[in-house]
Length: 157
Image 1 (cartoon, rainbow, N blue to C red):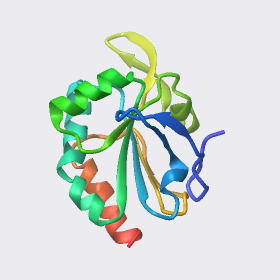
Image 2: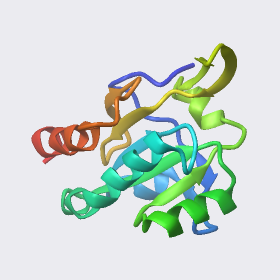
Image 3: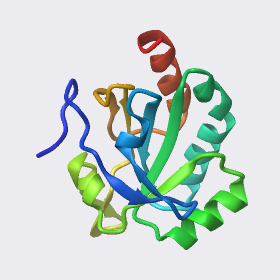
């Protein structure tokens, strides 16, 4: 079953790029969460999106929001991506795409005539109580990070 707006987001425990296990419940009562799903480390659109989040990271922190990126890439790939682009937030490993399926972002995709399963770029805002309060699906990268920041400023402060 897919999580719906207004419902509590499912708790999860995933390995993070720092080698620790991160759980949604770790942030309950403390931080809003910007949970963004992206297809693959080091690809052009994903790099632009990650760097946009990097560049606005302090603004999100000032609003008590933590950024968590999620993709099916293994931890070593996440670590290279973070190192190369100076990303100040954690990337979560969802190799079996269980979290992606819970958020209904594991989709059949088509590219150059080939069909395959992969992540549909999406962002979810979870408030401090653990409730899903905003979602963007089929995200277009340009301007998206600013849109997420504006939502938190206007609705969660």
